Picture (tube, rainbow, N blue to C red):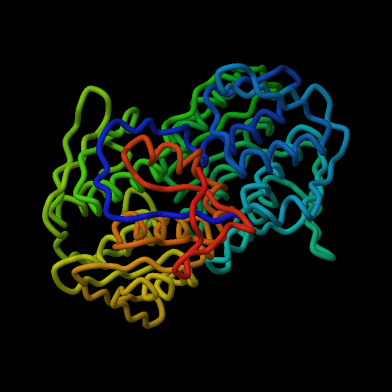
Length: 431
C-alpha cells in the first residue's frame, strides 16, 4: 500500500502540462473494439484506469501496446472472448462500456456488473433499457449481464437522466446498428464530443454530441483511426484549486477554457484570478478565498468530480460556504478526513456546511475514492506541517504522475510505502 507524504506551505508556481482526458480515452479504447483495423490514441495517460481497461480488452483477445511518446495502439483484429470478467469490471465502472461495442460487432456479450469508486449507487438500467429498444435480448443472473442481438436496429431513445455512460454506450452501439438512432436527453460532456469525433474518424455517422439530442446513422463497418484525446478538465481543475490554496501562480498548459467555465466561475467568485492565455489558463491567488455556494449538476453545471477538491479550498475560506451534492449519494466521505486536518465541516445528507478556518494542520488521512484522494492532497499542500495521504492507489486511477508534476511546481511531496521510518508520528519521505 502506497501513500503520499506532503510538507505543506510551499507556494506553487510554473507551468503544468495537463494529460489526456481519462474519461475520453477509456471510451475510445472501447470504441476501438468495433473495427478489425488498428487505432492509435495519442498521449493516452499512463494511469491505473487505462491499464485496467487495457487488461480487460486484452482478455477479450485484443492487442494493446504502448508506443514511443505515450501513444497507445489498440487492434481488435479478432475478439476471442465475449465475456468481460468480474475481477476486472468490478475495479472500474467504465469497463461496462465494452458492452455496446462488442454486442454491436459480435452479436453477443457477457459483462459482470460494474464497480468503481464507492460514491453511491450508479445503476446501469439506462444502458440496458436503451439496448433493449435497439433489439437486444438481455438477461441478468449471478452478477452478470448477457446481451444478444443478430444486429441492433436504430431506435428513438429518451434517457430519464443525462447519464454520461449510457449516452456513450448507446452512441457506440448505434454506429453499427441498422437504421438511425436518436438519443434524447443525452449527456453533454466535452468527452462525448471527443468520442463523436473519434467515431466519425472511424467512419461512423454521428452528429449532435454536446447537445441534448444525438443522432447516429448506422453503417456497415468501421475503420481504424488516429486521435489525440482532449485534455483532462478534472485534472486541470484540480491543479487550478491547488494554485489558489497555496497562493500560487500556475499556467495550465493545454487546458481548454470552455470546458472549465463552471469551475472558473466559482474560483473567480472565491477571489482567484483566472486568465486565458495562448497556452491555456493562468491561475493566481493571494488572499484567503471568499466563501461560495456550490451545487453539483450534470455538465455544463459544476462537475461532481470537482466537489471534493473545492470543499478542501472552502475549508480555508473567510466565512461559511454551502456545498450540495446532487449527482451521487455518498460523495461526502472526504469531509471526515478534512476534519482531521482542522476543517470545520458539518454534513447533513447531501449538504455540507463549511466554516472556513485560518489554517489546516498536517495529519494522517485516508483516501476513500479518486477525487477524495485528490482533495486530501490539496489540503496537504496548503496545511502547516506534514500530511500523509494513505490509499493513494485511488488517485493513481485518474491522475498521471501527479506527485512528479506537482514537485515541478515547487511542492514538497513524495510517495512512500510500507516500512518507511516514522518521526513525530508521521512517515518520513524518502527521495
